[in-house]
Image (cartoon, rainbow, N blue to C red; front, top):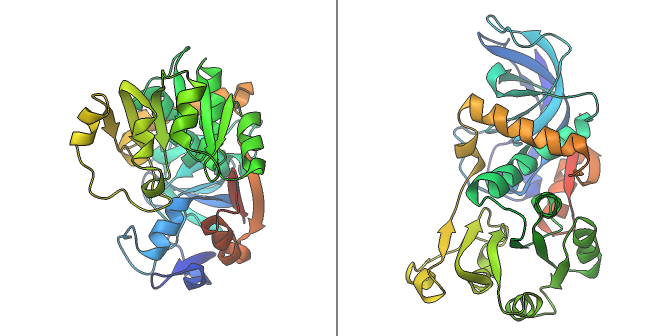
Length: 325
């Protein structure tokens, strides 16, 4: 069958994305065909589009998360049926009206969670899950710094960390974004363009500094993020929106207080289907309970994908953006 999809034939700016008809094979053993209703937009999509991350083949269809309904089952699929509402994460291929997905990568959606919300929360929400519950197990009384707190992952981190009993400090580029971060649970928000982030963290914490820093920004926030940590605190770098951190000197960790540093990825945490299922249950639980609201900044039709990527790269978005299909 043919499906409408975004394809990239050469690396470059948003304009390299083209809307095309793509031939889809029928689902094989252990696979299903999903009719996508919404696809999440993430900064990692930019990395693949511009060549910072290399896809396995060219041309390729961008997009790492989507939600929709099952329209066809392959042989051997027992845990799902046609009509089931599902969400999933894939390496690529989600900017499309339909796609084939391995059944063991699917998450069943409760009726209380819309397709748009599901598409906005899979990648960002599961990222927040492993950051808060596995990389550094946040507990009541911890002080957490979230760089870019008004971003898609940042807003979820603020809410979830607060729900766990932590005190959250966020950074944001504008007063409008600072307001969003505060609404999401940040006790204090630092305007990084106007204020000295390290000095403000020291003042807010009365010199005690933070237990953990979650940094998805990268180059422009390093090494200042290290200076916001208490001795033996943890620096968690999970993205590089401003560019990659280069020339990381391990000696800095000793000089700044025997710090821990890590660069985890979601793919390593969800590689095993059982791990994916467990993390998804945790995420669905906090969303369904109302403890975490998935912030949806905007929805746009698939045909507007070029404009959506331009807004994302220009830091004009907050929360999540979803392509409707």
